[in-house]
Image 1 (cartoon, rainbow, N blue to C red):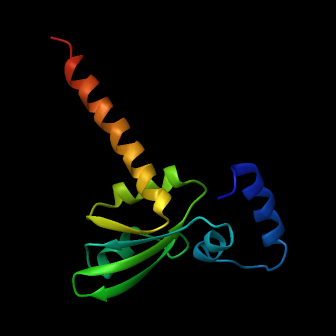
Image 2: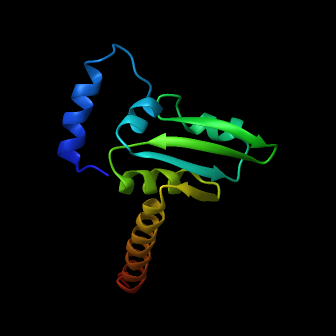
Length: 119
């Protein structure tokens, strides 16, 4: 995965090759594509994910596949967590590590917040 400045330079070069790109197309070109299996109906996920931010495909009546991209795995981890339903990361494996970092940070914040409440 490229660092942010290298990804920005690559993005500028890519944008010069065509006049229109979708979010998923750019994410794939920049190697920041994420695929997750959502435990929710495709229509409900699609309402929360604009077409420029990700592609939602129905798998069956109760689940869908979300392909999305962003500048960093940290942002993707946060975005996926905020979408609501349970999910499974299919790729990249590094996103699961980033979710662990986010979960740890949130748990530490919760623990500190509960112990420092004013009386």
